[in-house]
Image 1: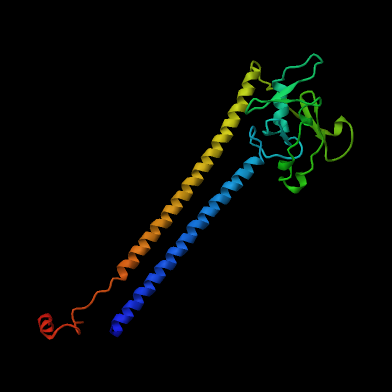
Image 2: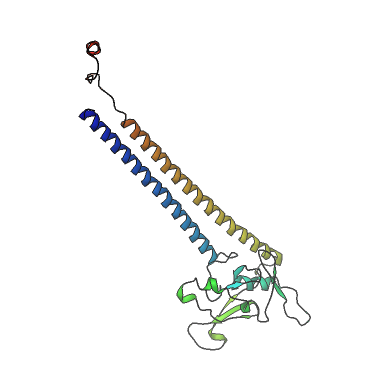
Length: 247
């Protein structure tokens, strides 16, 4: 083997090594992209757990305290109180409300005597809120108002902060329309989450396809460059009679 052939073999081996390293780097990029997609999906699912599926508002420790029903569905206190006010559940002979209907699965949850504020608080969700919202504030129901004590201190009704949770003030609107609004908001929330997941999958697929296509193009160009062309005048090993014909 001549020196020129030896150098050509070394160049081919180095090019093959570069191709392998490039493919390894691209493979690592694909895995990193998939890991990022998994992290994004976990973050989106975590964020969806920290918001009410009815009003799509983030939970807090006052009016939107996460309340857990017997069916394991969690909603904010304001939505459950509003649902209880506009569509009261059947009452027993003593006049106390018997249950609260879940907006999603229609499962019945026994309602405490103090109303929705006395429902079980989802501590697991509450602990995931910001540090200053992890302690539940006392909230009570006064007719069609949900009230809490003002942060300025004081005592009495004047120091309370209240929100109205009654039915709409529009005349002639039946209460069933409000129940349908809850279903529509829930379906809209699920639709938005599905659209976000589909867009995320399409982005991951497009990025993976671009990386794979880049790998194929690079490997194809490396293979074409590694093909050595032997010049015609390099005929040292040929018989003398053939050398004359080639010249």
